[in-house]
Image 1 (tube, helix red, strand yellow):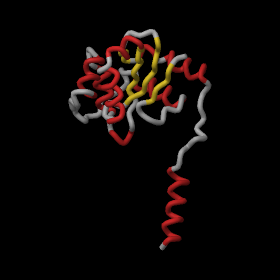
Image 2 (cartoon, one colour):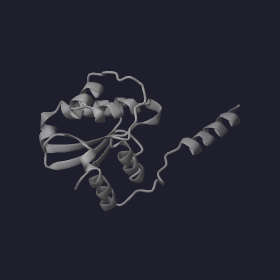
Image 3 (cartoon, helix red, strand yellow):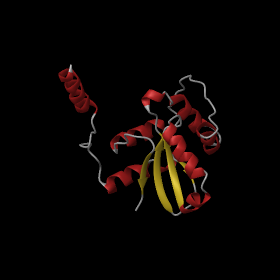
Length: 154
């Protein structure tokens, strides 16, 4: 029995272990990719220091991050957050992402969904008129593998 448990543990570690060998783009290439989708960002804050953030509107960690940022006026004065909505597949947040991007006021809609826990119907909308596909392409290139994912500009 111990042998089975040890083998199971080793197989699990091999399959689910940290992928520290992820290929990462250089800082300059990553920044260039992010600059290319800057027009698709939902901007929070007015500070000089730029921070690029990938969040999923249904992710509890992303919600905590947005709550922390918007609840701290000093952080909003010091930093300018370029927020990109990037779905985590298991959360099925595509409808929420599309609804936020299609809203007349995406910032207010983002706050409704992430802070007020407003629900959005689960019908799958066409994302062709939203920047979702461009954001997904960049996120895959720069290897966004968690949410929230932050990139601080030097």
